[in-house]
Length: 109
Length: 117
View 1 (cartoon, each protein chain N blue to C red):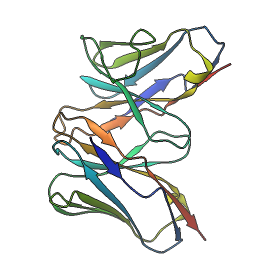
View 2 (view 1 turned 90 degrees about the vertical axis):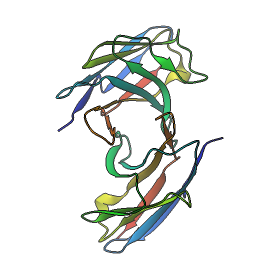
View 3 (view 1 turned 180 degrees about the vertical axis):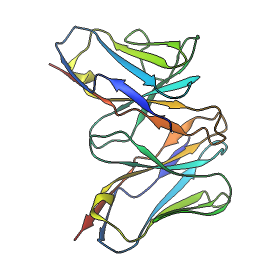
View 4 (view 1 turned 60 degrees about the vertical axis):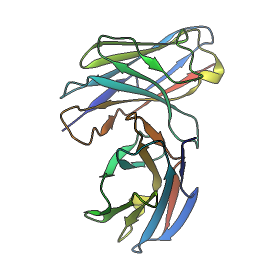
């Protein structure tokens, strides 16, 4: 079966750095997405990786290793507004998005 | 930009009634729209994929006669929850993909919170 694993919850301190990991086993691979979702709101797009390596976008970076079925989202200079759930999603060979359960990130002052 | 709107943002209805939720892509043509359901503290669950002008493809376990999807135009898809029951209370989110973008990123609407009493 298809599976996306990410930690359920993480806690970090304002101003620090946090890395959220995502491992996947899917039938085929056509890209990996990270989305941010604040409570009660719809997800918003953060990043897209289809080739191995690091994609940097301001305070957020996303890394992909296809051979290891592994990705991480790196958040730097954490701000209180970064408290949210972070969803990892992989597009499989049928171009369907397989969603992880999300990682709830709690930022403490 | 790529903006997707949903209407209504929240709705309360009585058990046994039907509710229609609209999803619109405001500034692009969306050949494919997706409908998700999300229960509290759970991840998104894809309900169906709809392509303009054709019948929606439903995920396993989703009753197509209960959740009617109509993708009438390139900018509008509707989800009708028929004979709603309290267990249908959930957060319903639509998304649309832009075929002109190589990533086929999905743009999400703001969601509709449905409460069935």
